[in-house]
Amino acid sequence: MHGYANPARFLKIARPATGWLLGIGLVLLLAGVIGGLVFTPPDYLQGETVRILYIHVPSAWLGMAGWASIAAASISQIVWRHPLAAVAGRALAPAGATFAALCLATGSIWGRPTWGTWWEWDGRLTSMLILFFLYLGYIALASAERERGGEGRMAAIFGLVGAINLPIIHYSVLWWRTLHQGQSISVAGGSTIAPEILWPLPLTMLGFTAVFAAVSLMLMRADLARTKLEARLRRSAAE
Amino acid sequence: MNQWSFVIAAYAVVGLGVAGLLAFAFVTMRRAERAADAVRRRR
Image 1 (cartoon, rainbow over the protein chains, first blue to last red):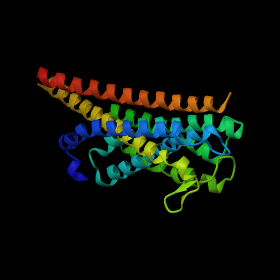
Image 2 (cartoon, rainbow over the protein chains, first blue to last red; image 1 turned 90 degrees about the horizontal axis):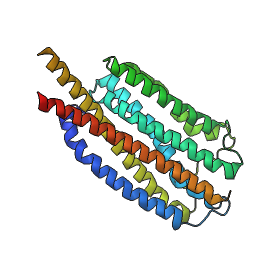
Image 3 (tube, chains in turn orange, brown; image 1 turned 90 degrees about the vertical axis):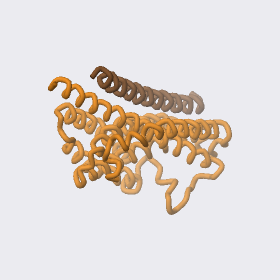
């Protein structure tokens, strides 16, 4: 991991990877969305609205995975003082916040025809809303620290503390049995969704994940370029 | 509203959200990299 501590070495990989991830992500997304909208049957209970599954589940996954990645970057920064960890944290936050917001929005739109309400203060919805607010707090804190020229340690601590919300989101459907359905897909236990409805989901999951990675790389590149620019301006002013 | 209205609304929100995020990231990256290159060339 420390082999990529050198920004020049990191950029050598990040530059081509950005385009590849974006291209692959968009192709997978297109295939998954067309599959989900055209080639899958309606659900026997939910009807056509089940198609929201293909965009809602990946949004939820990326909202949570984004914060898990921020927490990993925070550990890397606090324990090993990895020079790119703070850059990664700052780059991951806008993408994670966007997907957390999309998860809330698509969930709300899905909730209206299936539950009869746009919003309910249920455990899963509320903990996801808290995750979105945590992202906003992290973005504000990390950018304020960057402006001040700090190392981003406060944001890293905030990133670690905020990770406590992830198991709460995950287990909320078991701890508080309210409106949101229980887990339908698990790594160990398979899926309770019919295969003819489920198959486009891995395509959109992978597609959104690749797009998320491409966005994060773009924002990391922007952050590194800004650091380079500031260093050059400081050097020019000193000469 | 029929069920397809909700499906279309959800896909439109996600499409706009992802397109907006991509545009924001791309413009931020291009601006920062161009500014850094411009200062290097000036020196």
